[in-house]
Amino acid sequence: MQSGHRHIRRININATPPNAIPCVNFKDVNSLVYEEALIRTAHHDERDALMDIWKQVFGSDDAKLFFDLYFSPQTCVVAQAVNSPAAPAAMGFVFPVGSLELPGNSVACSMIFALATLPEHRKRGYAAAIVEKLIAMGNETGRPVTVLCPSSDGVFEYYKAKTPFREMFYINTQVHQNPKCATSDSIAFPISPQEYNQHRCTLLAGKPHIKMDLRAIEYQYRICQEFGGALLKIQSKCGISLAAVEITSSDTALAKELLPCPGADTEELVAAIYKLYPKNKFITRQPAVKTDDSVNITRFGMIYSSRPELYPDLGQICLPWYGFAFD
Ligand SMILES: CC(C)(COP(=O)(O)OP(=O)(O)OC[C@H]1O[C@@H](n2cnc3c(N)ncnc32)[C@H](O)[C@@H]1OP(=O)(O)O)[C@@H](O)C(=O)NCCC(=O)NCCS
Image 1 (cartoon, rainbow, N blue to C red):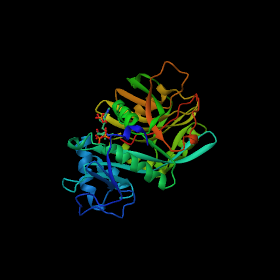
Image 2 (image 1 turned 90 degrees about the vertical axis):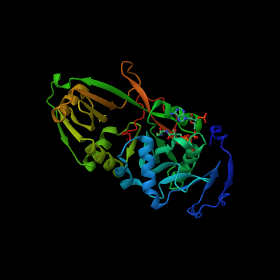
Image 3 (image 1 turned 60 degrees about the horizontal axis):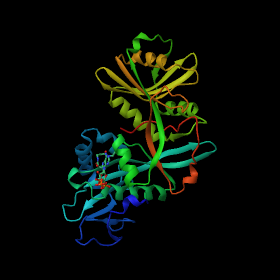
Image 4 (image 1 turned 135 degrees about the vertical axis):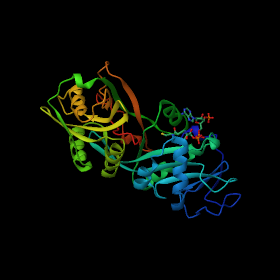
């Protein structure tokens, strides 16, 4: 790990903490004690406490969908402050998400998600220590690459300063006002996660991207539905394009992944989506092409592997595509 961890005082490794805590499971391999916290895998009965951390830190009530699909002691690491009640003070998740597809190479990868420290426990190195353990857990399951999608620019800086992650994935974000003004012969249909997955593989073939596994696509299907949208196939004269749509406010829709087929016009695709979701404003996120200076390209995802030779600097025209954020 990088020098950003130096401020963390590692008190002990795989040993009983100074004040023994009844709920600590010492069978957890790699349990580490940092400052005054034990870094360990979560317990089954901590689900509610962890959902409460989600609510407090992310300010939203929508944890259930994620916890139903992804929570288990094998996917969640917590920091438990030694001298306070046994409840976790911070958490983070790691789970298989699919593979990183590069020209001539496919590498299994894990994803880190929902890293959160309760405000009163921050700046003690808990999150950095959790990330360190999450990376190790991902590697232990045979996935040498770990990816994540920071929720803001500030969080990118956090990961750069405190963890070994580096920027890798980019998006082209566009805002479309009054899409009804554009004409479109294209038609959009809601489709199943399985069908979305098949077309996604075809549309992204040969481009650097994360090939999401079916569980990740199913999760997106459910969140799109929860936010009033759907996974869509858009049939046009050029072929089949895809969009994962959420309604983010009374007059705004977000295509959190828009994958145009070759030759498809974005405005026309948005106009097709408008027929299903008549909103005045559409925000689209789609793969970015380095040569196009006129578009709004921003960083979106990060990567770490102890084997960086697995993802050499591609000098690519097509910037690597992460896909859906899990938010
Ligand atoms: C980001 C977060 C998990 C860090 O938790 P933590 O346990 O305090 O992290 P660490 O102790 O490892 O590191 C703290 C350092 O990161 C810095 N930091 C935290 N959030 C930051 C941000 N958004 N931008 C820049 N720096 C940040 C702190 O200022 C502190 O710096 P210092 O060590 O120089 O004093 C916590 O601030 C949090 O829960 N934030 C809200 C949820 C969130 O954004 N999660 C990430 C989802 S991708």
